[in-house]
Image (cartoon, rainbow, N blue to C red; front, side, top):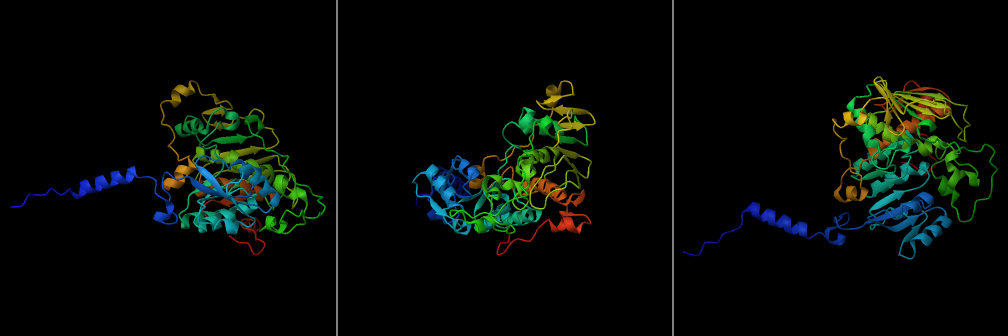
Length: 424
């Protein structure tokens, strides 16, 4: 008889093979095909919009800029001066940048009226997306962007980070202890959240538009028609573009558009409202101009369960707690009317962990903490407030249908017509 050979079992073979594969982590992307990303690779990034916000995120850890795009050649030159001569490709039309096979992530750092279109096009082109706030300028664009990201299996990050990092303005803590307090039920239910300068927030009412803009010649370095993109045509004036665009309804929404998602996304998170929206918005504000954004005194949002968010623009709620419930209050500095709060909170579980590293999320295809779904919902809070201000009246909202109740005029502003040839 021949000598018996001990062949490895299938289980042993698989285990050994997986061990060898784990040890071999650096695999060139071209070997495994377009779209494969080895965990050891540095992610490549294309940045659309190279003003202050775009340039400010060139150095995000674990990424490398390989392409930039801007409709202002002056911005491109500033960006190249910052990046140095590293073979970075430059474009004035984002549609060329998103087709580059070497780009993994598209960072959308344009004014908000471009966010939805560019982010959705990037997702359809197979790119993961990092988008500045507010996520979209309209609710309809937000719905389309959610569909594009999910249909094409992309990873999406909205760039407001307070739900998972940094001290939350005047509260003297990250949001996690606030979330733990709300989840504990110690404050009772429903809750009222007041966002004002007295609770540590600034609505930046210097972001208002001018109503007497004189047409001026377009600078030679700026493609103004492309800057306007889907927005209605208005004659060029420097106050419409770049640093002051937030003061015009066509491109943003003043202090509410600028700071709203920073302030309200964490509220949505700790109230547990990531899958819904307020059912009512009430406003107290001067009549708004049709073009230029103005200020407002108060905006109040109410949810179906009675929870409220009060945006106190005028600062009249001088003694308001940040969060108030039937059983207690929470003030800035994490001070509370509940005795021995820290000792009581220690008995409750911490909030569920979140994926807060975007590089990790992209490499391992994990949903990011602030993604297309919950980002759309917190952006919707901002956008229904903008619509109420523009129309000058209180509104009822259906969170399931994501439309206003019995208000044709308001529903027309959910998804205003875009200037051709742009669409999402």
